[in-house]
Length: 560
Ligand code: NOJ
Ligand code: CA
Image (cartoon, rainbow, N blue to C red; front, side, top):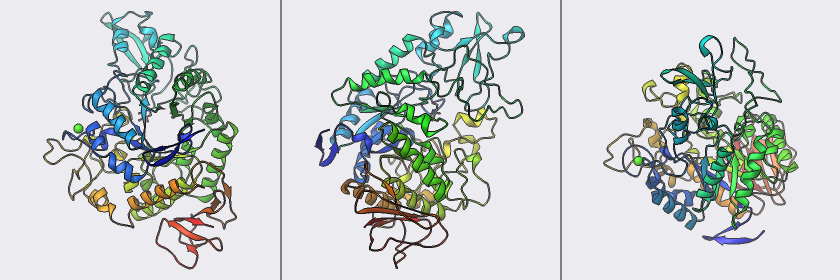
């Protein structure tokens, strides 16, 4: 394993991903360069300095491919081009070069479970006959019941409603096609070798253009059980058995062959390319299977994200995660928020968190959101996360302490979850509101002066207090905390990859050492917690309580 200087930063060339801090760029909402109210590549290029100053190691950019945007770009019409609304291939290439010049690696998002219904292959499938090779790249089936009027099986779309839609053949109701997400996102049939070849070629296309890796969308969904058997859903709740070892479309063993082939593609490059899998599976043990040495380098650790703000639950999530990655020699990753879940300031800002809150509807309506509490806990959670061994993900706006915008008007909602749930689940738009950069009124610098359109989702007036401009010179701000934590993480030899040991602590307190000389204490109890004797505070998430104590809902980094 060699080391090298990249733009003044010491990085392990071969294994940088084992402890990288990756910034998630939700492109539609990061920065708008051309004034149409939608974030774009020009906006990212103009704001790369923010990421350099923040001190992250890499960016992951959500899908930027041509797309009708039925699911925020996760409905890809062409995997080898850039959506014109976001920019051009030349701009994309320039962004990769400019990021590299700043020492930032670039990870793209690949969506292999499904395409857009506007993808050339799906259009060809619709134009072709049942049973044709064009149809076999997706899952087309005749319906059940008289006239084939019933879907081929009982699978449900993740966004609500049946996972099947019917097409017309020769002007009459015809076959059905499978879509585990929106009807505009038909699932590929991964048992067709053309699908496998196509995706390996797409990986090479972007790797050849200098891209450092891919985040793999729905990595656990690609392979479906032969014959597409029923799930056996409960008719009342429409829910399946919570855990099952042989689920017909999630986490099937066959996905591992696909990722072994992908790993061979990644490893064929002199500078290895990396993968991070999005795999929602039942247990850390199942997740570890994706991380075997000839498969994916890393995967998101959603157990940490889902853990409630309670010491025993967090401790268990941390232990379980570390044990299981250690068993396969992989590095852990940690994440608090992303574009699919309620922002953690809003999850943690409920006096009692129940660990749910994946969706807004999971959040208890009462007691109401307490922004100060959420902010305080989010600061402590950030120091906890950045002190753990492995890599970490920052979702854009985490560094500003953004909260979920829970009161977006119905008519602006764009997440397909809202319509597919019959307007019962408001979906994920509340964590996707465009970032506030500067100024005191919308668009808060998100779009340039004189923009001809408002941001694609309205920003609340109180974003004025949390713009980058408002925080950058305030030593007490969330942004200053993130910058200080990431700077220290780079400098301190104990942080990032490396040993981890729990230290004795009072109930409700997490305390651990990272190698010799560094400790982190997180107080999740109601009263002040005692610091280890002789410890010196390097960084604290809250005001100094004095007397060697840490206040409730605060964390400290210590030299010991
Ligand atoms: C996971 C992505 O993160 C989410 O935004 C998307 O809706 C689904 N996969 C379907 O692609
Ligand atoms: Ca734009």
